[in-house]
Image (cartoon, rainbow, N blue to C red):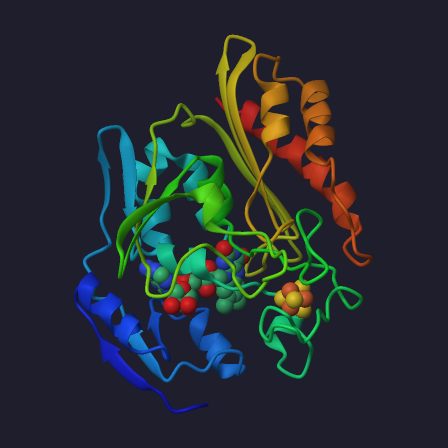
Length: 327
Ligand SMILES: Cc1cc2nc3c(=O)[nH]c(=O)nc-3n(C[C@H](O)[C@H](O)[C@H](O)COP(=O)(O)OP(=O)(O)OC[C@H]3O[C@@H](n4cnc5c(N)ncnc54)[C@H](O)[C@@H]3O)c2cc1C
Ligand code: SF4
């Protein structure tokens, strides 16, 4: 373990100043990802700035929008009555993540910022463009069972590991950030990025920009929702493939639908062509199957993960069927 300094801050300004002034400082929230990365030698910040005392834990509904503070715990968010009533899809996705103990420590902001679980990223003896730009991608021709089937590049085929983020992209969430240049709002779809030529960048945040909250606009998806997660163990395991499905059904017809997948791309993967196809159609297995076929256009396997090409459409259909069957 390397030596590092530790400081605690109590305001967003102090948190931002601490990182602006010191290029070797990093915020720590629940620490469930950052400390692992430090133990493995992947990251070596010289100063940890503890942001757990920031007043950013509130979950509230105002003007039709639900706002979740960045420091709200994953477990508190999943159990919150506003979230369970208004955003049951988000509650399901959170509960599918990690384990109860980890969710008791992990924060909403930290969950969004967690790094990929690609084993080559964590093994400092192996090449990895994300950890060490220009060193190559160990997974491309290596063991790539957990890796991407959408949006990858020759530089990186890693996936984003979060469950929570799959629900948030489906629900059209907006990320509120504050940094040295002021505040800005980022559509969740644009928060995480594809690897392209710069896989070292997971998202569009700039240095010292702090996530303060996530906002979810008013939506009709409080009944027919499901989060289907396929994984190697029933707990404490990341998704091989996951699907967040939310449907609004009027009579026999789908009036609105949201779909997103996890475990398949460098970012939570929204399935807009499948959504467009389903709007105005009956909630039938036949339509769900056609939507899944559309969603899989452009998918590509890299060897060990070819099974995802079959698993993903099955999971989409299963998620839609389960969501539609809820009453
Ligand atoms: C064994 C194991 C299994 C897991 N399984 C799952 C799973 O199935 N599904 C899943 O979704 N997750 C899973 N996780 C990951 C877990 O959810 C994340 O580690 C957790 O959400 C990270 O939150 P944290 O608050 O602990 O972040 P930290 O580890 O404290 O921080 C992570 C990063 O976020 C940055 N950061 C934190 N807060 C902010 C902020 N407000 N603004 C800007 N940057 C910030 C930190 O600087 C750091 O770089 C698992 C983790 C483990 C160890
Ligand atoms: S897939 Fe990405 S994270 Fe994994 S080894 Fe390749 S560059 Fe690194």
